[in-house]
Image 1: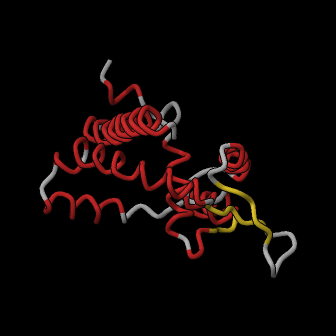
Image 2: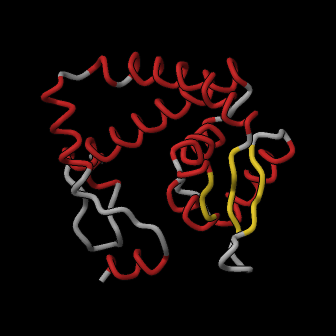
Length: 168
């Protein structure tokens, strides 16, 4: 049996071609490999898992080092409950804290602490080293531009509503 016949959406529906399967699996393999390398390096050198680094990074880039929890969840590609658990952990470690929203009593912000900024600053070099070695060095500038153009064709999905709208 060919690989192309292994993957189909339902009996009787067309399968993916060998090229489609290779492209899809290549994307998944590359993402997994890069995420694992980053996670191992950041955890080993800074005690900071990749997801925690990403959340601290978004907070570090935000004005005043703070973001609404719902916006941060979307940027970090985490569910709201997943972000809540991660921010709980970052709070226990003194790297972030929750701040209330002055204009909306129901709104909550995640705020970067001085200790969080220091840990983030220390980890940025490790992050960049891994990205350069295991991703950027594998491609020419022209290829990186082409990849950027291709990735931008895929619209981000932030919610179930986005998924449902795109599925139609």
